[in-house]
Image (cartoon, rainbow, N blue to C red; front, side):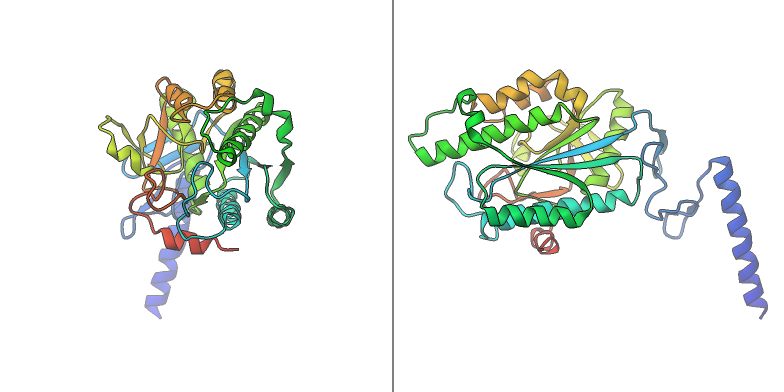
Amino acid sequence: MRQIEKTYKKSVLKKLLIKICRLLGYELIDQADMSFITSLNKESASIVGKKSITLPLGEIKIKRKIRSLDIILKTCTSVNLVTQNKKRIFEENKSEYTFRTINSLLKSLKKSKQITNDINFQITIIDTGSSEEDKEIMKKILEKSQFKFSFIDLDLRDYLQRITIIKKNNTQIENNMKSTMASIIKSFEISKNSDDLVYFVEDDYIHNIDCISEMLSVYEKFSTILEDEIFIVPVDYPYLYQKNNSTNILIGQKYHWRSVKESLLTFLTSKKMVNKYYNELIKMGEVEHEPYETILHKIYDKEKCFSPIPSLALHCTNVNSVFGLSPTIDFKKLWEDNKL
């Protein structure tokens, strides 16, 4: 009986101490498991838009608060790989990668929504060439999510005269590239109407459930530290480990991040950056380069871009590609976890 009373008194005192600490703006740490006692979110005491706390580095007051995130997803379930005939990892139909990409994004958005109510989310799908059945499935997935969305069935004829491709002596591959470039142009045109952050996504990226929340936290934190807008990619691309380039390592919310000078076309940035480099970005959709992302890499020479360690998303290319299959992540689990 005495033990019960002792536990009760300790609990009351603990609750009182927590209330006092919250009023004074302090955080208490339980040294048994290094959790934040005063935080409603036991995983972290950080608050999106207000502060970022990392043990044992302390607190950073967020000066760059995020207002909104527009996700612009380019889809095409009729083409396996734009310039290749090889099979992707798991050897499924292209539509399966698209559906799981959407599902993983929605799960990650839902997780992010739990820790912030002040950020507005909007999803836009730009589709080129998917079957009517696949388009209906995509729309139904989005309708069930309760997130705001729009679906654009792109008319390629509106863009073909603006596009110049590298001749490949293969009509099918050339048509695939024109379709891809048209959707890229449209994605940047749409981004001009965004309010704040924009996440450009291709339809073969399966996202970790923490991906969106980590990227948003990192954007606020890093842009506050650097006092500038930045670029973020969700993938730890394996090909970048084959280059002898210097890099800087920063600590995010749950992940380490490194500065990179290259990426593919799935990346997150701000409307301010889109406006600053709009002519260059649009040119990526109008004129094909080799490598294709050359213009984007030139932008990274002038701006900061960061990639997570380990990866926050799986790029489902073919198994022999150096542009996918990030190291030290469980490919199979991420794939299975996002099955419809």
